[in-house]
Length: 218
Image (cartoon, rainbow, N blue to C red; front, side):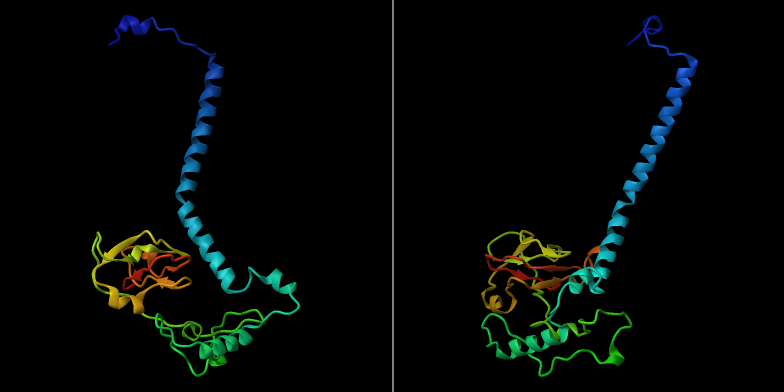
């Protein structure tokens, strides 16, 4: 503990009054910048969310690849691609691991059903169900926290653009469900419900699967 005498005897630098005022003014200016920077940093999540939405909107409108299309002399139109998907689906044999919901006719949306958004000339509007193999819910059985059992992805495993294959639980006696609910590379997982509105409707793609995974009802 310092005594009053000890405090009184402490040495300290003392600038002139004009210099002190300059120091105070400089500190106030710098601290104002710190506060401003802090406020901007607090807005970063909102800015990133808006930027992500803008990028996705530009991608869906063809703006991200406009320059590329201008440099392509022969670009496969979406209508021709749709026809190829139909032929490939019809030629694909039934898989013991994955059943394919085939459609007799895969067509572009009629003009009366198309959204008002303008698309590039080579694009078309289609129904999502016409360009996928199948669409179904996952397993509703409640999994266990620890082994034994087959690895089953949690709802939180789906993240924007990717799937975290380490975010798992375990489902005992799941051998009979492997044929129907096992994941394949390239599968898309959608979250249909979540505790956070930010994670509702998230879509992630399964990039690599070297093991067998199941998936919960999303």
